[in-house]
Image (cartoon, rainbow, N blue to C red; front, side, top):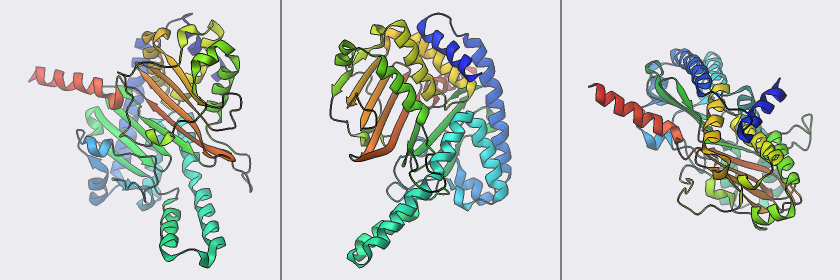
Length: 373
């Protein structure tokens, strides 16, 4: 079934069929209602102090945009920490998260959180191996980082009243930030940060398990289909751009910058299908109707407005690289990072410069509210 859905979505971008915006709008209304119900169930499990910690004003942009890719020891979070929740509260929270993400997105998020145990074990082993060679200062710093690597060290914030139909959700911690903004039955799911370390688990009972693999596979398929002339347009540099430039909300796409790289208009029909597969894989973190609506907006922008750029070795995707896909309603940065000898570490950012945090919808919502007064 997923294969046929992807075929249909790929033909949307290649111009063979057109998405019907009304269908996505109806679907989002159902998804938004389910999210609001799940949010109410979660809030009902909390005591007064917990509700005070988790709830923020909708216009509190500092708290809403205060997500980061970094460990909490480097970037403290606000809100309610999962570690503080009892079983019933966690069950309700995961009900909300499952309703706010696709099955793919929810699975990715859970795997990313679980990987914190591997990072923690790695630092713990390194501290033990160094023994007395570590100074007290460096040992204390390493211990703080180790303790921050924790699958329970993720923080949730809710902005506004879910019952009102216009509100926002943020969950973030190391290597993960997911947002959902609901405005009058429509869902904006950007920005999103997805990361992992390790991307492929190397040892133990879970050796071989991997995360964000399909994103890599779709990109690899596209890269393999490009010819030499297209590669000359695509590749900006053999040096990988520093991925720290999109580690948090302080980085935003510069839509006034001159476009660079390869225009999607210069791809063949088959290559455009492969590009649409890749884009849909990234957008697939969103709930089904919200993702469909985003794909419809990308289609409306037109292939002429989508650009691709590459940094790093394009002949070997097991080495470090960065891919950027940009358009009026889409900005994706995908980096394989980590040590030169084993870059087993991904960073992915998905943004919508035209409607980040549902800003376009929120502005229209507020203007309509003032008109009615």
